[in-house]
Image 1 (cartoon, helix red, strand yellow):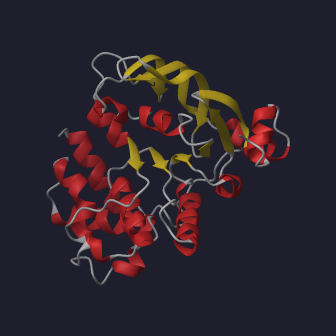
Image 2: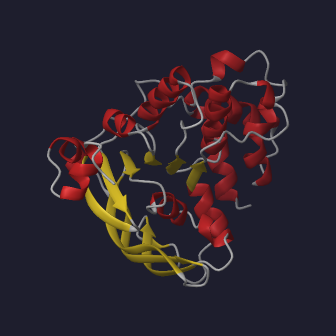
Amino acid sequence: MSTSMINKWEDSLMETTLNEKTIKKLPPFSQRKDIIEIKDFNFYYNKGKVHALKNINMKIKENSITTFIGPSGCGKSTLIRSINRMNDLIEGSLYEGEITVFDQNIFAPGTDVTQLRTEVGMVFQKPNPFPISIYENVAYGPKTQGVKDKNVLNQIVEDSLKKAALWEEVADKLNSPALGLSGGQQQRLSIARAIAMKPKIILLDEPTSALDPIATIKVEELILELKKEYSIVMVTHSLDQAARISEMTAFFNKGELIEYNKTKKIFTNPKNPLTEQYISGRFS
């Protein structure tokens, strides 16, 4: 692990990023930078036999929440998993086009995929804590990156759990099994584990679909808070959720990006009839 990477962890000792005095005031949405750009992107499964994504073009801004909506099998999860190349793990997958993250084509030869997945963290549909302690779940990633200093690890764990709005609930039981937490707590722990890797972007693939309404609200409140520091891209089946928390919404159908616009416009004045049918529940 590089010295600069170790320094990044050590710098976290000085951070209190959820303190409103230290959080930067976000510029107006229109003035925020594009951090992800998807250009003429096609994705195939089964060695080209299944065309899952068709000529996708879109840009995603920093410090924003962007939701992907659409019926099951429309390609939204395939796209979000392409942004940090998780689909590389699927045998027979192929792609065409580009996805740039911070102006770098993630499919360019020589791309460090491990570093990409560090900077673009991911949380999945079902909470997936490791069968170890709460502390070790959060410390696991930094340890694999070479962080050994106990004080640094303690601070990373505390900061990450605070950012995941979980610290007050678990501070006195860090050595307890993570699997003993409730489903909502386990999902927030999964988010804390992603935060511990110091990402710049967090991908969320239906993070509340397995949670009860109260836990869902807590995770949504957390996501809104995290936007102050991270860029969030989220797949959701809940139209209400997309309307509540996102600034931009993309509607997909049959592997195509049908409409992409500000969330308010998508839900109140969609341009495409298919979008209007889906939003109003008349989609078949």
